[in-house]
Image: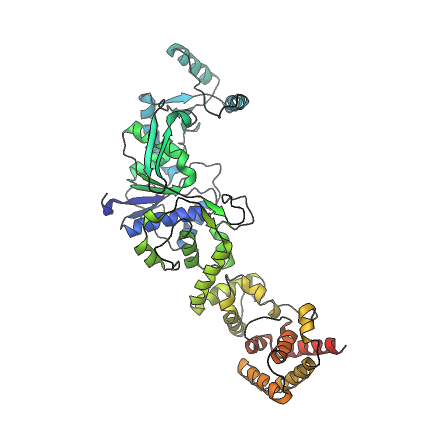
Length: 496
Protein backbone atom coordinates (compact mmCIF):
# COMPACT_ATOMS: atom_id res chain seq x y z
CA UNK A 1 0.00 0.00 0.00
CA UNK A 2 1.35 3.39 -0.97
CA UNK A 3 2.47 5.49 1.94
CA UNK A 4 0.18 8.37 1.02
CA UNK A 5 -2.88 6.12 1.41
CA UNK A 6 -2.13 5.18 5.01
CA UNK A 7 -4.97 6.27 7.28
CA UNK A 8 -5.21 5.20 10.91
CA UNK A 9 -7.53 6.21 13.70
CA UNK A 10 -7.86 6.35 17.45
CA UNK A 11 -11.49 5.95 18.48
CA UNK A 12 -12.10 6.73 22.16
CA UNK A 13 -15.40 6.34 23.96
CA UNK A 14 -16.42 9.29 26.16
CA UNK A 15 -17.29 6.84 28.94
CA UNK A 16 -14.28 7.84 31.06
CA UNK A 17 -10.96 9.62 31.15
CA UNK A 18 -7.89 8.76 29.08
CA UNK A 19 -6.43 5.48 30.37
CA UNK A 20 -2.76 4.52 30.00
CA UNK A 21 -3.70 1.64 27.67
CA UNK A 22 -5.82 3.86 25.45
CA UNK A 23 -3.12 6.53 25.39
CA UNK A 24 -0.71 3.85 24.17
CA UNK A 25 -3.12 2.93 21.36
CA UNK A 26 -3.34 6.57 20.34
CA UNK A 27 0.45 7.05 20.42
CA UNK A 28 1.17 3.92 18.36
CA UNK A 29 -1.37 4.97 15.71
CA UNK A 30 -0.05 8.53 15.73
CA UNK A 31 3.56 7.47 15.22
CA UNK A 32 2.63 4.98 12.49
CA UNK A 33 0.80 7.73 10.61
CA UNK A 34 3.48 10.37 11.06
CA UNK A 35 6.36 8.00 10.19
CA UNK A 36 4.63 6.95 6.97
CA UNK A 37 3.40 10.45 6.04
CA UNK A 38 -0.16 9.19 6.48
CA UNK A 39 -3.25 10.57 8.20
CA UNK A 40 -4.13 10.25 11.88
CA UNK A 41 -7.85 10.50 12.63
CA UNK A 42 -9.81 10.87 15.87
CA UNK A 43 -13.29 9.34 15.90
CA UNK A 44 -15.55 9.47 18.95
CA UNK A 45 -17.40 6.20 19.59
CA UNK A 46 -20.28 7.53 21.68
CA UNK A 47 -23.16 5.18 20.88
CA UNK A 48 -23.17 3.77 24.43
CA UNK A 49 -25.10 6.77 25.69
CA UNK A 50 -25.86 5.26 29.11
CA UNK A 51 -22.15 5.04 29.98
CA UNK A 52 -21.02 8.36 28.49
CA UNK A 53 -19.89 10.87 31.10
CA UNK A 54 -20.09 14.64 31.10
CA UNK A 55 -16.98 16.18 29.56
CA UNK A 56 -15.77 12.70 28.54
CA UNK A 57 -14.97 13.76 24.98
CA UNK A 58 -13.35 17.03 26.05
CA UNK A 59 -11.22 15.20 28.61
CA UNK A 60 -10.06 12.62 26.07
CA UNK A 61 -9.04 15.22 23.48
CA UNK A 62 -7.48 17.59 26.01
CA UNK A 63 -5.26 14.85 27.45
CA UNK A 64 -4.22 13.64 24.00
CA UNK A 65 -3.14 17.19 23.17
CA UNK A 66 -1.29 17.40 26.49
CA UNK A 67 0.69 14.31 25.46
CA UNK A 68 1.69 16.19 22.32
CA UNK A 69 -0.56 14.46 19.75
CA UNK A 70 -2.22 16.29 16.90
CA UNK A 71 -4.59 14.87 14.31
CA UNK A 72 -5.52 15.52 10.71
CA UNK A 73 -9.25 14.85 11.04
CA UNK A 74 -11.61 14.70 13.99
CA UNK A 75 -14.67 16.17 15.68
CA UNK A 76 -12.84 19.38 16.58
CA UNK A 77 -10.96 19.89 13.30
CA UNK A 78 -13.36 18.44 10.72
CA UNK A 79 -12.36 16.57 7.57
CA UNK A 80 -13.74 14.99 4.39
CA UNK A 81 -14.93 11.77 6.05
CA UNK A 82 -17.15 13.14 8.82
CA UNK A 83 -19.11 13.30 10.95
CA UNK A 84 -16.49 12.11 13.44
CA UNK A 85 -18.91 11.20 16.23
CA UNK A 86 -20.79 7.93 15.86
CA UNK A 87 -23.90 9.49 17.39
CA UNK A 88 -24.02 11.79 14.34
CA UNK A 89 -23.62 8.96 11.81
CA UNK A 90 -26.93 7.15 12.36
CA UNK A 91 -28.12 8.03 8.85
CA UNK A 92 -25.08 6.14 7.54
CA UNK A 93 -25.68 3.01 9.63
CA UNK A 94 -29.45 2.61 9.25
CA UNK A 95 -29.61 1.86 5.48
CA UNK A 96 -26.69 -0.57 5.79
CA UNK A 97 -28.45 -2.49 8.57
CA UNK A 98 -31.54 -2.57 6.39
CA UNK A 99 -29.44 -3.90 3.50
CA UNK A 100 -28.31 -6.86 5.62
CA UNK A 101 -31.93 -7.48 6.67
CA UNK A 102 -33.09 -7.40 3.04
CA UNK A 103 -30.35 -9.82 2.01
CA UNK A 104 -31.14 -12.26 4.81
CA UNK A 105 -27.76 -11.67 6.44
CA UNK A 106 -29.38 -10.22 9.55
CA UNK A 107 -32.72 -10.57 11.29
CA UNK A 108 -34.95 -9.16 14.01
CA UNK A 109 -34.53 -10.84 17.39
CA UNK A 110 -37.22 -10.46 20.05
CA UNK A 111 -35.62 -12.55 22.76
CA UNK A 112 -35.91 -10.61 26.02
CA UNK A 113 -33.05 -10.05 28.46
CA UNK A 114 -34.79 -12.39 30.92
CA UNK A 115 -35.02 -15.14 28.32
CA UNK A 116 -31.40 -14.67 27.30
CA UNK A 117 -30.30 -14.84 30.94
CA UNK A 118 -32.31 -18.03 31.44
CA UNK A 119 -30.62 -19.53 28.37
CA UNK A 120 -27.19 -18.67 29.78
CA UNK A 121 -28.00 -20.25 33.15
CA UNK A 122 -29.19 -23.43 31.44
CA UNK A 123 -26.03 -23.55 29.34
CA UNK A 124 -23.85 -23.17 32.41
CA UNK A 125 -25.74 -26.01 34.08
CA UNK A 126 -24.96 -28.16 31.04
CA UNK A 127 -21.32 -26.98 31.31
CA UNK A 128 -21.54 -25.25 27.94
CA UNK A 129 -19.97 -21.93 27.02
CA UNK A 130 -22.72 -19.26 27.09
CA UNK A 131 -23.96 -18.53 23.58
CA UNK A 132 -26.98 -17.23 21.74
CA UNK A 133 -29.40 -19.95 20.64
CA UNK A 134 -31.29 -19.19 17.44
CA UNK A 135 -34.80 -18.37 18.60
CA UNK A 136 -36.49 -19.42 15.36
CA UNK A 137 -34.81 -22.83 15.17
CA UNK A 138 -37.08 -25.48 13.66
CA UNK A 139 -39.80 -23.01 12.67
CA UNK A 140 -41.38 -22.77 9.27
CA UNK A 141 -41.53 -19.35 7.66
CA UNK A 142 -45.20 -19.06 8.70
CA UNK A 143 -44.37 -19.99 12.29
CA UNK A 144 -41.52 -17.52 12.34
CA UNK A 145 -43.78 -14.75 11.01
CA UNK A 146 -46.37 -15.60 13.63
CA UNK A 147 -43.79 -15.48 16.42
CA UNK A 148 -42.59 -12.07 15.26
CA UNK A 149 -46.17 -10.78 14.98
CA UNK A 150 -46.90 -12.00 18.51
CA UNK A 151 -43.77 -10.26 19.87
CA UNK A 152 -44.77 -7.01 18.17
CA UNK A 153 -48.28 -7.29 19.56
CA UNK A 154 -46.76 -7.46 23.04
CA UNK A 155 -44.94 -4.20 22.33
CA UNK A 156 -41.49 -5.79 22.27
CA UNK A 157 -38.77 -3.97 20.36
CA UNK A 158 -36.22 -6.13 18.54
CA UNK A 159 -32.48 -6.07 18.34
CA UNK A 160 -30.93 -6.83 14.98
CA UNK A 161 -28.66 -9.88 14.93
CA UNK A 162 -26.08 -10.72 12.31
CA UNK A 163 -26.43 -14.23 10.88
CA UNK A 164 -23.05 -15.87 11.54
CA UNK A 165 -21.90 -18.28 8.80
CA UNK A 166 -21.67 -21.91 9.95
CA UNK A 167 -18.30 -23.64 10.34
CA UNK A 168 -16.28 -21.04 8.43
CA UNK A 169 -12.74 -19.95 9.25
CA UNK A 170 -11.99 -16.24 9.54
CA UNK A 171 -8.27 -15.47 9.62
CA UNK A 172 -5.85 -12.59 9.26
CA UNK A 173 -2.12 -11.93 9.42
CA UNK A 174 -1.83 -9.76 12.48
CA UNK A 175 0.92 -7.12 12.38
CA UNK A 176 1.84 -7.97 15.98
CA UNK A 177 0.59 -11.48 16.74
CA UNK A 178 1.20 -13.17 13.41
CA UNK A 179 -1.37 -15.48 11.82
CA UNK A 180 -4.65 -15.65 13.77
CA UNK A 181 -7.75 -17.66 12.90
CA UNK A 182 -11.19 -18.34 14.40
CA UNK A 183 -13.88 -20.83 13.47
CA UNK A 184 -17.21 -19.04 13.20
CA UNK A 185 -18.86 -21.68 15.40
CA UNK A 186 -16.76 -20.56 18.39
CA UNK A 187 -17.75 -16.91 18.67
CA UNK A 188 -21.00 -17.34 20.61
CA UNK A 189 -23.65 -17.41 17.91
CA UNK A 190 -25.45 -14.67 16.00
CA UNK A 191 -24.44 -11.33 17.51
CA UNK A 192 -26.29 -8.05 17.86
CA UNK A 193 -25.48 -5.31 15.36
CA UNK A 194 -28.28 -2.87 16.34
CA UNK A 195 -29.78 -2.29 19.76
CA UNK A 196 -33.48 -1.96 20.56
CA UNK A 197 -33.26 1.83 20.17
CA UNK A 198 -31.83 1.39 16.68
CA UNK A 199 -28.30 2.47 17.59
CA UNK A 200 -25.62 0.22 16.10
CA UNK A 201 -23.36 -1.84 18.34
CA UNK A 202 -19.60 -1.43 18.42
CA UNK A 203 -18.77 -4.33 16.10
CA UNK A 204 -21.07 -3.04 13.37
CA UNK A 205 -20.37 0.68 13.65
CA UNK A 206 -16.60 0.25 13.74
CA UNK A 207 -16.63 -1.69 10.48
CA UNK A 208 -18.82 0.85 8.73
CA UNK A 209 -16.78 3.76 10.03
CA UNK A 210 -13.41 2.23 9.19
CA UNK A 211 -14.62 1.42 5.68
CA UNK A 212 -16.30 4.76 5.03
CA UNK A 213 -13.27 6.61 6.41
CA UNK A 214 -10.86 4.55 4.27
CA UNK A 215 -8.91 3.31 7.30
CA UNK A 216 -5.96 1.26 6.06
CA UNK A 217 -4.49 -0.09 9.31
CA UNK A 218 -6.03 -0.73 12.72
CA UNK A 219 -3.74 -0.84 15.76
CA UNK A 220 -5.56 -1.63 18.97
CA UNK A 221 -5.29 -3.56 22.23
CA UNK A 222 -5.10 -7.32 22.53
CA UNK A 223 -8.53 -7.35 24.19
CA UNK A 224 -10.05 -6.65 20.75
CA UNK A 225 -8.79 -9.89 19.18
CA UNK A 226 -12.10 -11.66 19.82
CA UNK A 227 -13.96 -8.82 18.07
CA UNK A 228 -11.94 -9.12 14.88
CA UNK A 229 -13.59 -12.28 13.43
CA UNK A 230 -17.02 -10.71 13.95
CA UNK A 231 -15.86 -7.61 12.12
CA UNK A 232 -14.36 -9.67 9.31
CA UNK A 233 -17.76 -11.33 8.87
CA UNK A 234 -19.37 -7.93 8.38
CA UNK A 235 -16.69 -6.87 5.91
CA UNK A 236 -17.37 -10.08 4.01
CA UNK A 237 -21.14 -9.57 4.09
CA UNK A 238 -20.77 -6.18 2.39
CA UNK A 239 -17.98 -7.28 0.06
CA UNK A 240 -15.60 -4.72 1.53
CA UNK A 241 -11.84 -5.06 1.92
CA UNK A 242 -10.78 -5.19 5.57
CA UNK A 243 -7.89 -3.07 6.87
CA UNK A 244 -4.73 -4.64 8.24
CA UNK A 245 -4.98 -5.41 11.94
CA UNK A 246 -2.38 -5.22 14.69
CA UNK A 247 -3.30 -6.18 18.24
CA UNK A 248 -0.90 -4.82 20.83
CA UNK A 249 0.14 -6.82 23.86
CA UNK A 250 -1.51 -6.59 27.24
CA UNK A 251 -0.11 -4.21 29.85
CA UNK A 252 0.52 -5.97 33.13
CA UNK A 253 1.30 -4.62 36.58
CA UNK A 254 4.86 -5.05 37.78
CA UNK A 255 3.59 -5.75 41.29
CA UNK A 256 0.86 -8.30 40.53
CA UNK A 257 1.91 -9.69 37.15
CA UNK A 258 -1.74 -9.41 36.14
CA UNK A 259 -3.42 -7.33 33.47
CA UNK A 260 -3.59 -3.67 34.39
CA UNK A 261 -7.10 -3.27 35.73
CA UNK A 262 -8.94 0.00 36.20
CA UNK A 263 -10.11 -1.42 39.52
CA UNK A 264 -6.53 -1.75 40.77
CA UNK A 265 -6.18 1.42 42.83
CA UNK A 266 -2.53 0.70 43.71
CA UNK A 267 -1.49 1.96 40.27
CA UNK A 268 -2.41 5.36 38.83
CA UNK A 269 -3.81 4.55 35.41
CA UNK A 270 -5.26 7.74 33.98
CA UNK A 271 -3.31 10.47 32.21
CA UNK A 272 -5.22 13.11 34.16
CA UNK A 273 -3.78 11.76 37.41
CA UNK A 274 -0.22 12.14 36.18
CA UNK A 275 -0.93 15.66 34.94
CA UNK A 276 -2.28 16.59 38.37
CA UNK A 277 0.89 15.26 40.03
CA UNK A 278 3.09 17.39 37.78
CA UNK A 279 4.58 14.83 35.43
CA UNK A 280 6.01 16.13 32.16
CA UNK A 281 4.09 15.22 28.99
CA UNK A 282 7.27 14.40 27.07
CA UNK A 283 8.24 11.85 29.73
CA UNK A 284 4.77 10.30 29.74
CA UNK A 285 4.85 10.01 25.94
CA UNK A 286 8.28 8.36 26.10
CA UNK A 287 7.28 5.94 28.89
CA UNK A 288 3.99 4.89 27.31
CA UNK A 289 5.65 4.28 23.95
CA UNK A 290 8.02 1.79 25.56
CA UNK A 291 5.07 -0.29 26.81
CA UNK A 292 5.22 -2.91 24.08
CA UNK A 293 7.59 -1.23 21.61
CA UNK A 294 11.36 -0.98 21.66
CA UNK A 295 13.82 1.13 19.66
CA UNK A 296 16.99 -0.26 18.12
CA UNK A 297 19.93 -0.12 20.55
CA UNK A 298 20.15 0.47 24.27
CA UNK A 299 18.96 4.09 24.47
CA UNK A 300 15.38 4.65 25.56
CA UNK A 301 15.10 8.42 25.78
CA UNK A 302 14.34 10.37 22.60
CA UNK A 303 12.27 13.37 21.63
CA UNK A 304 9.07 13.11 19.61
CA UNK A 305 10.69 13.92 16.26
CA UNK A 306 13.26 11.18 16.80
CA UNK A 307 10.52 8.70 17.71
CA UNK A 308 8.60 9.57 14.54
CA UNK A 309 11.70 9.05 12.43
CA UNK A 310 12.67 5.70 14.00
CA UNK A 311 9.20 4.24 14.56
CA UNK A 312 8.86 0.74 13.13
CA UNK A 313 5.70 -1.27 13.75
CA UNK A 314 7.64 -4.52 13.34
CA UNK A 315 9.26 -3.77 16.70
CA UNK A 316 5.92 -4.02 18.50
CA UNK A 317 6.18 -6.85 21.01
CA UNK A 318 3.70 -9.70 21.27
CA UNK A 319 4.75 -10.29 24.88
CA UNK A 320 2.97 -8.50 27.74
CA UNK A 321 4.32 -5.05 28.58
CA UNK A 322 5.13 -4.38 32.23
CA UNK A 323 3.91 -1.15 33.79
CA UNK A 324 6.67 -0.12 36.19
CA UNK A 325 5.89 2.99 38.26
CA UNK A 326 9.48 3.19 39.49
CA UNK A 327 10.78 3.34 35.93
CA UNK A 328 8.27 6.07 35.11
CA UNK A 329 9.52 8.12 38.06
CA UNK A 330 13.14 7.59 36.99
CA UNK A 331 12.35 8.57 33.41
CA UNK A 332 10.40 11.65 34.44
CA UNK A 333 13.27 12.70 36.72
CA UNK A 334 15.59 12.58 33.71
CA UNK A 335 13.25 14.89 31.82
CA UNK A 336 12.90 17.19 34.85
CA UNK A 337 16.68 17.57 35.07
CA UNK A 338 16.86 18.55 31.40
CA UNK A 339 13.80 20.82 31.40
CA UNK A 340 14.18 24.59 31.40
CA UNK A 341 13.77 26.22 34.79
CA UNK A 342 10.67 28.21 33.78
CA UNK A 343 8.75 25.02 32.95
CA UNK A 344 9.63 23.41 36.27
CA UNK A 345 8.93 26.65 38.12
CA UNK A 346 5.45 26.89 36.62
CA UNK A 347 4.51 23.28 37.37
CA UNK A 348 6.01 23.14 40.86
CA UNK A 349 4.56 26.52 41.89
CA UNK A 350 1.09 25.21 41.04
CA UNK A 351 1.73 22.23 43.32
CA UNK A 352 2.86 24.51 46.16
CA UNK A 353 -0.26 26.64 45.74
CA UNK A 354 -2.55 23.59 45.54
CA UNK A 355 -1.12 22.28 48.82
CA UNK A 356 -1.63 25.65 50.49
CA UNK A 357 2.11 26.17 51.04
CA UNK A 358 2.16 29.28 48.84
CA UNK A 359 -0.67 31.85 48.60
CA UNK A 360 -2.88 31.60 45.52
CA UNK A 361 -1.73 35.05 44.39
CA UNK A 362 1.86 35.30 45.66
CA UNK A 363 3.67 38.62 45.55
CA UNK A 364 6.98 39.04 43.73
CA UNK A 365 9.02 38.39 46.87
CA UNK A 366 7.24 35.10 47.56
CA UNK A 367 7.54 34.07 43.90
CA UNK A 368 11.29 34.67 44.01
CA UNK A 369 11.55 32.68 47.26
CA UNK A 370 9.60 29.84 45.63
CA UNK A 371 11.86 29.97 42.59
CA UNK A 372 14.94 29.46 44.79
CA UNK A 373 13.20 26.65 46.66
CA UNK A 374 12.17 24.84 43.48
CA UNK A 375 15.64 25.17 41.96
CA UNK A 376 17.04 23.68 45.16
CA UNK A 377 15.00 20.50 44.71
CA UNK A 378 14.74 20.35 40.91
CA UNK A 379 17.24 17.56 40.36
CA UNK A 380 15.74 15.41 43.10
CA UNK A 381 12.10 15.56 41.99
CA UNK A 382 10.59 12.76 39.94
CA UNK A 383 7.35 14.75 39.63
CA UNK A 384 6.36 18.19 40.80
CA UNK A 385 3.95 17.22 43.61
CA UNK A 386 6.96 15.87 45.50
CA UNK A 387 8.09 19.43 46.22
CA UNK A 388 5.58 19.65 49.08
CA UNK A 389 6.99 16.65 50.95
CA UNK A 390 10.61 17.29 50.07
CA UNK A 391 10.44 20.89 51.24
CA UNK A 392 8.11 20.35 54.20
CA UNK A 393 10.73 21.78 56.57
CA UNK A 394 10.07 25.18 55.03
CA UNK A 395 6.33 25.02 55.71
CA UNK A 396 5.90 23.04 58.92
CA UNK A 397 7.33 23.72 62.36
CA UNK A 398 9.45 20.63 63.08
CA UNK A 399 9.16 18.55 66.24
CA UNK A 400 12.09 18.10 68.56
CA UNK A 401 15.16 16.41 67.10
CA UNK A 402 14.86 12.69 67.78
CA UNK A 403 16.06 9.23 66.80
CA UNK A 404 19.13 8.89 64.62
CA UNK A 405 19.34 12.66 64.11
CA UNK A 406 19.52 13.30 67.87
CA UNK A 407 22.14 10.56 68.29
CA UNK A 408 24.18 12.24 65.57
CA UNK A 409 24.45 15.56 67.44
CA UNK A 410 24.32 14.39 71.05
CA UNK A 411 28.05 15.00 71.65
CA UNK A 412 30.45 17.61 73.01
CA UNK A 413 31.27 19.38 69.75
CA UNK A 414 27.75 19.99 68.41
CA UNK A 415 26.82 22.75 70.95
CA UNK A 416 30.15 24.47 70.27
CA UNK A 417 29.41 24.57 66.52
CA UNK A 418 25.81 25.67 66.94
CA UNK A 419 26.58 28.52 69.40
CA UNK A 420 29.31 29.92 67.18
CA UNK A 421 27.20 29.56 64.02
CA UNK A 422 24.22 31.32 65.67
CA UNK A 423 26.41 34.15 66.90
CA UNK A 424 27.87 34.76 63.45
CA UNK A 425 24.68 34.60 61.35
CA UNK A 426 23.00 36.98 63.81
CA UNK A 427 25.58 39.64 62.84
CA UNK A 428 25.30 39.16 59.05
CA UNK A 429 24.24 42.26 57.09
CA UNK A 430 23.18 40.15 54.10
CA UNK A 431 21.62 36.79 54.87
CA UNK A 432 22.17 34.78 51.70
CA UNK A 433 23.73 31.44 50.75
CA UNK A 434 27.12 32.95 49.87
CA UNK A 435 27.49 34.71 53.22
CA UNK A 436 26.17 31.64 55.07
CA UNK A 437 28.79 29.48 53.36
CA UNK A 438 31.50 31.93 54.52
CA UNK A 439 30.10 31.72 58.05
CA UNK A 440 30.34 27.92 58.07
CA UNK A 441 33.98 28.17 56.97
CA UNK A 442 34.58 30.79 59.67
CA UNK A 443 33.08 28.50 62.32
CA UNK A 444 35.43 25.76 61.17
CA UNK A 445 38.41 28.09 61.44
CA UNK A 446 37.48 29.35 64.91
CA UNK A 447 36.48 26.01 66.50
CA UNK A 448 38.80 23.66 64.63
CA UNK A 449 35.80 21.37 64.02
CA UNK A 450 35.35 20.24 60.45
CA UNK A 451 33.67 17.73 58.14
CA UNK A 452 30.60 15.87 59.31
CA UNK A 453 30.95 17.18 62.89
CA UNK A 454 30.74 20.71 61.51
CA UNK A 455 27.93 20.70 59.00
CA UNK A 456 25.70 17.91 60.33
CA UNK A 457 24.80 19.71 63.60
CA UNK A 458 23.95 22.84 61.59
CA UNK A 459 21.77 20.92 59.12
CA UNK A 460 19.94 18.96 61.81
CA UNK A 461 19.41 21.97 64.07
CA UNK A 462 18.08 24.23 61.30
CA UNK A 463 16.08 21.69 59.25
CA UNK A 464 15.68 18.75 61.70
CA UNK A 465 16.72 16.52 58.80
CA UNK A 466 19.93 14.58 58.19
CA UNK A 467 19.76 14.85 54.42
CA UNK A 468 18.71 17.53 52.00
CA UNK A 469 19.82 19.91 49.27
CA UNK A 470 22.74 22.34 49.51
CA UNK A 471 23.04 23.50 53.12
CA UNK A 472 23.74 27.25 52.65
CA UNK A 473 20.85 27.58 50.18
CA UNK A 474 18.54 25.66 52.54
CA UNK A 475 19.42 27.93 55.48
CA UNK A 476 18.83 31.05 53.36
CA UNK A 477 15.34 29.83 52.47
CA UNK A 478 14.51 28.92 56.07
CA UNK A 479 15.35 32.52 56.95
CA UNK A 480 17.52 34.02 59.68
CA UNK A 481 14.80 34.35 62.32
CA UNK A 482 13.52 30.79 61.97
CA UNK A 483 17.05 29.36 61.68
CA UNK A 484 18.08 31.03 64.94
CA UNK A 485 14.89 29.88 66.64
CA UNK A 486 15.52 26.26 65.59
CA UNK A 487 19.16 26.41 66.69
CA UNK A 488 18.28 27.75 70.16
CA UNK A 489 15.57 25.08 70.55
CA UNK A 490 18.08 22.38 69.64
CA UNK A 491 20.68 23.76 72.04
CA UNK A 492 18.13 23.78 74.82
CA UNK A 493 17.32 20.16 74.01
CA UNK A 494 21.00 19.13 73.99
CA UNK A 495 21.80 20.97 77.22
CA UNK A 496 18.59 20.01 79.00
